[in-house]
Amino acid sequence: FFLFLAPVAALSALRADDLPAMSKWYFHADFKEMRASDAGRHLYAWLQDEVFEDIREDAGVDLDKEADYLTAFATEDDGMVIIIEGDISQETEDKLVAMGAASGSLNRHGSGKNAFYHIQDDDIGIDGEDIDIDIDADSFDNGAYFSFAVKKKLIVTSTREKMESLLANRGKVQGVRAERGQLFVLNAERGLIQAGASTSDLGSNGNWDSNILRNTRQAALLVADKKGKISIEAQLITTE
Image (cartoon, rainbow, N blue to C red):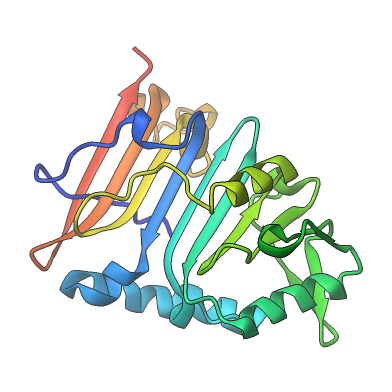
């Protein structure tokens, strides 16, 4: 899923103050721009086949029709935050609440415009089938909080405090979303890079001795549609 690329030269670089405070990593996808742009349509077609179809089959939720943006980030204090923006239907809301209720661990908190749910079990069953929701399990050790209280947004958090904060702020988070034509944005510390390649193993067989990866502290990647073509920019911050 991480094609994360960005525009060369014409787009400004990612900066730390563009991201949620103290982010360990940040990811943003603009599905609306993908559907509307010439180059983006090819990426979107891949997402339809490889991502949205699986979600539709497993959970009965059609992100293809309802999601315009996806923003996710994680911090040491707040854990993971996921925000899906778009025309979230009542049907989708009902299905997700039913899935939570079927697990036997769903609790409702707040009221009115600040209502949200807490689910403690990430193995959710519905209609006699088990559905495994597996998103960075370490971030959801104490379950997940989710809410539809903000119009056209599905908000998921690791902590109650972060959920209450986001609801009070109507689901707004600071982030990189200003560049015209952007499709994917990723900003990450070295820890996320190592999810793809462990630096401890790089020199063990002589085939993967990469000083670049070993000495990378942070990485930022962006993919954008620039005049009908995919434009890619990658930036690395080294340890020195």
